[in-house]
Length: 611
Image (cartoon, rainbow, N blue to C red; front, side, top):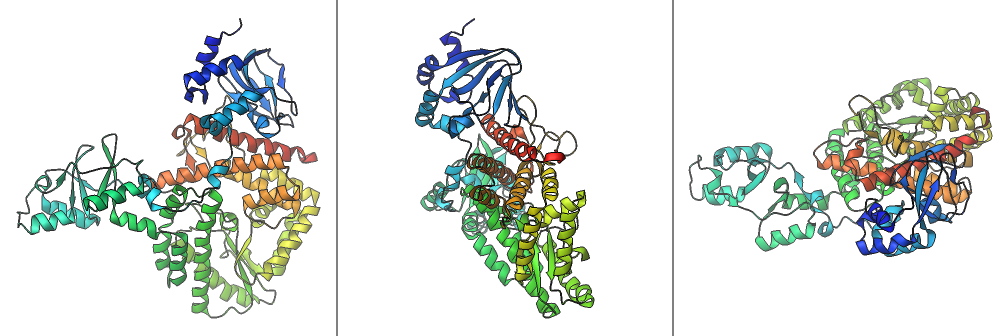
């Protein structure tokens, strides 16, 4: 039975993003929609076909496959598909087939583009890129930063019946200049050190006096969605130094003048300066402990992930160089030239709020066994122990310069890479994957430049090694489940969560490494590798842009999750619950994972006998 316009209207109002549109806009849209019935097993469209518009599933199920025939998505009621092709050149970049008898609604091409141009909510839904965000200046502007970034969460509280003496002890022990006075979750007043001196000491009140007699009752508050200028104006107008933050009648935080000063003082440049002047690892740790707050501010300021991780990695680089300088001051000058290199996330300049250390030393071939086992072993231990003190914990896999295997003369390193390329065993693939991300941090860079150039050339020419590296890059897969869901962790501490590192960014990191290997590209940073691969022709413009957009969304989502953990008073991690995301965010994240799976399928399709 044909669908009536009233049925289509009511259906559209249950589908995002059309449910966010005014009723009159949806009414004008309804007559333009075309209904199509597709029997089970029949094709909706094939790869490369001209698309008639965006498809919306009214009834049934549809399976979407990439150009190699690998299934990348299984869609059901209310899901849309086909928009990626329309936003490119109007041609399908996937194939779609009805799994069951299916009824589709088609929003024609012209109406689709008109709707995107006229409705910002629709544009944001279908535009998977984060170009707008990445083009922001991202300045840490106190006046326009949202209050939930500035505030101290879980403020120290007391009850109205608390004595002023107990309140003073609490303020002293918790090292705070104010107490929020609460009854249950409700804020009833605020008590400050100025109240204690001006109202208690000056009036010689008994120490048993309840704080209810001296507190400021019903203090002015702000919501977490307020901005820094609101705090500044209130403080200046009311001549106060503390503003409680209340949401839904519940106390959630407080902003003090100290918080504002701290926000303005924390910057990557300031942290680098302080580390460069530190004289002990303990002094450096006092600086690196502020990295989580820096992460919060950078993300809140709109900085794209590649800028955030670069700035945070710069701090690790500075720690390393300062520790090397302190080590040489303690042990004396190095007996032969050497290079300290980082691999892993530091090597790629992609460190976040959670980082271990991955490093090695390349020594000049004139080094003696005595020098290597003596001076350089001591220097490596001094630096790695110092990095651990600074919060860069020891590598669980012992990929550190303290391991004699990774503190060797240049000729040994050449033998390592020659062996990994000639005989790509599983261990060789793993080690090569780590070591292809090497980046010089300090020392004689000539020891690395020739090694990198020769190794890339040799590796790219060995088709068997490249095939094994491609195979190795497919071991981490995006967390895609059936029926538009996610494949979350099944058991353990992180049950029902997504691993945004190993199943989120790592598959893209692995792809970037393979593209760099195939193109003999010297870049170590993942985004730089993808951009270089597009420029060199190793990655198509359309496919590359899709992958860049997907990477940006996944990496930004990971950082936003880490920021949320820090704001909640916890430590940043990589485990995200899909339930913490809105339907809009889940839809975009899943589409990004689909892009990554499609690119894995494409690169895997050329693996020949190893496929």
